[in-house]
Image (cartoon, rainbow over all chains, first blue to last red; front, side, top):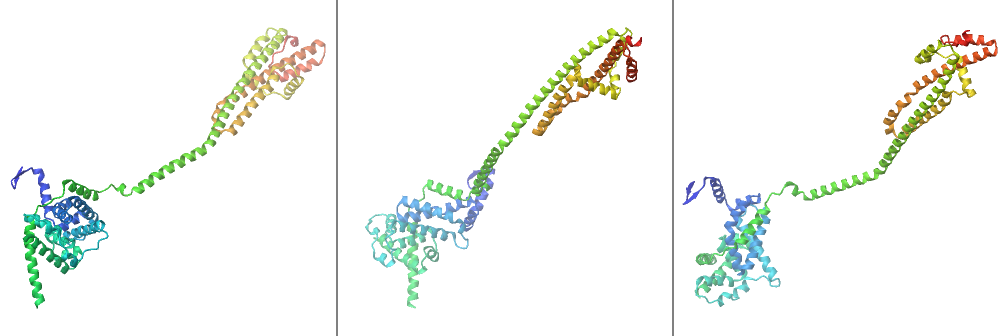
Length: 198
Length: 278
């Protein structure tokens, strides 16, 4: 028996622990490559790293747990299917969120096929639902403010806040220019600032 | 210059706003996916990379192989069913051949028994004749006759002359009461029929060859029977000639002496009756 970081560990478990720590040190790109080669354990680690962020990305986009669950599961299914197409030259997070973003866009198109894609000009002047939400707590105001943002702004802002991607990467994920991303973020931040001050 | 300066200011204010927002956002409740959903996704991911057995990769080939085996087995069964009638005919012919063979064997055995019976009849008649001759012969001649009976083979081994043969033939032609002369054609006919049946069976079914080999020993007894028959004929002939000579002598015909000489030439060791020794 060994005493490691306040835990008693049997000697037989040492190879497992050393293997797990070895895998933990691997980057997302390496893990995805290993999973594509058939290592299911690599996917377990990859999933554990990204499950929360991806779930929140969907949940705060649609503000509906059931829909969020469907979108979340569907996005992972697409990632699993596309494992052979992954190239380690691009960051895994950007690749994964591009799939998630496309999945979300498909969902929007299916639920509202007649509506044209909103433009920034239109969305700038449109009042969000956050303005109607009068809540004493800052978190609720922020949640309401995010929900009240136009789709593109909300999407861009959540990609920035949840994943920490750079603007260039967000631009690749969403398929727009870096300036567009910056513009969307600026509008979103200003709106949320206003809602938080109010 | 103003635009660049403005862009720099805008970026700075954006970054400040994002930092502040990130801090507030981080304080929000950290939503997590349900455990069941986690498990479903992980299971799906594991299933996707599970290594399937080699034969499962070629499932269509496995099915095709199974179907081919079934078709092959079915065609073989059909083919066997088509060839079966010929085989049944062959079996039927073999069975018929065996039955015919059994019938022929039975016929042969009947023929043999008939032959034995006829030989027995002939022997009885011969004994009667011999007794008749012995009654007219002196008592001393009896042991010689007995000796002659005891060694029939030696007698049979003696070559028959032309006269004997002609006498024998003339006896048969005149229809005298000779049992052998009656039995021989019947026996030969039976044997011929048996041999013909045998030949037919050999041509009809080759499998019956073994049985024909079993039946052939019965045919092999023929030389022995003919030997006995010829020996009996010789004895009867000698007796008849002697009787004829005695009759000539009793009738007062002088030719009996020449006949006696001729008889002695033919049968030098044959004992003469007392009527002729006087």
